[in-house]
Image (cartoon, rainbow, N blue to C red; front, side):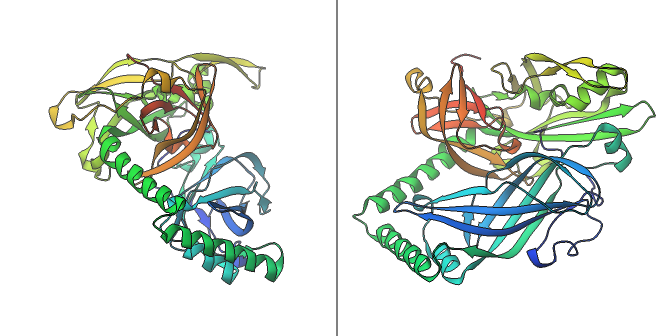
Length: 432
């Protein structure tokens, strides 16, 4: 999955999120249509409810996609997080292709009321709103032909879909009874679930007050010029974190994103493209200012300085007209994928992120780690996942999309790692 490419203008590549009944005709002149079709109730437990979400995608011409991700999703009034769909597909023209179902787990500890869930089960339908992004697999020439574009254009979702409950009337009644019992437990001050919900509220407040001041939001902008003189512009967005009053960490991919993109690396090495200096910049915001575009600190204006950019390359063999070509692609899933930078002005200074002890950072498993995901507007979303050690790396149980790359991985006693890929991250170093 490539990092998020933010377009300045993108009429041609709008991604339409269409209602099931008229998904082919709801939006015209769209290249890709992603439709949410239905939700299947899988299980209702004493502390959680499990669904499967079904979607499909249609393209107006033959096209490859790498993945689909979602943000700011709601089921009725209830905020939900839908895992990205990591499925490289070739889409025939005007043919609907079902995407893999998305498992959706809602923990009662994370919500104040189960009423939106009860209503969805009772009515046999629900309204889903939010935004979807598709990562399109197109080469540099296609990008240049289309002009300034985004390979992951966002489009709003607002659709009413069926909620399917197994077992008919009896199954629906059993699900409602279980949800009603869960709501009673949430309201009962002496219950374990009520205590867990209160603990979760306190933890969310701790994340906002103790950790978000240590978070930064970054955007890297660059352009490639092709042989015929056409330009392809990119912008890459992610997060990072402070390690001292003035120093902070980003992924190395954020600082030099073209080195992590196979199309860009191949074109640069072959001479089919050159990296342009004009327009290239790295912008960084303190997290509490990230929704204000004019509040960024700029590398080109000397408000940010780079102390170190690390990285680890791997050799790939890329097929071409004259046979395979060997290219050096930087590895995202590597402990060397990080960069150390610092602010040059005190108005951007802030507190370092609290780090967990050596013992906690070197656990074999973590039952729950919190992390941050940044959206197009610079707002942070709090997610959570279980994780385990794999050698000297962290393996995430639940996948994340590239909007979470660079985020801290936070355990109740402190931060233990940094997200670097959809499924992986590095353990925080004691010294950078």
